[in-house]
Image 1 (cartoon, rainbow, N blue to C red):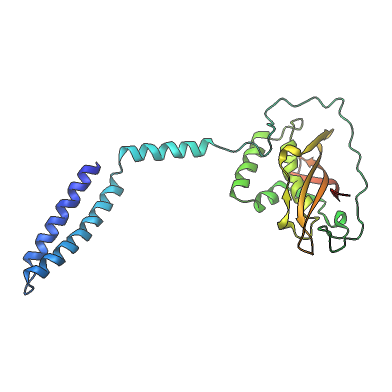
Image 2: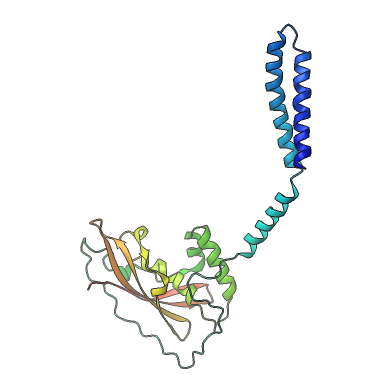
Length: 242
């Protein structure tokens, strides 16, 4: 097909060139050939682009179909290294959750935390609000994860719970956009009864002096399946060097 399109381009170029030369009027033949060559080339390019758009090559069509299928099938299903496709562990002997006392001491300028951050943090947050605040890649991953887990009350939703913990943690910071969470391999996870999850990890955030400060955080959330929300049960951040 590319060869036929090229032949059409040559034919249109030659015919347009010849037509301009024959109808040049009082122009000298030298100028007529220059205008005919330029005009024929432009018209030939237009015809060539139209033909290529109407009759795409077989290779490009197959390649486009392959890429489309690959994009549709490559749904991200994991936000953490651990996969939640494993069978849910039995929670019969799981401990009950007990909240720890939050740290609400005043926040000096060298701290990246807001004063009384535990009281400032939202009490609950919906999955939709986190979805709306995420970028395109995050929305795809969160949608695929929610779809995969469904509404099974006994399924292990550790990954989704950690995603929901993140905005609670950043709400405690003076500059949430500066938050940089540590690698997910360093996360300590504990699951309790009634879909309660506790996470411990580190992050760095900017303080009022412009310095990056490292913190260890503990965040506990509980799924509210009826409203598709997650309730904050506990939040505590502490400098890693303290």
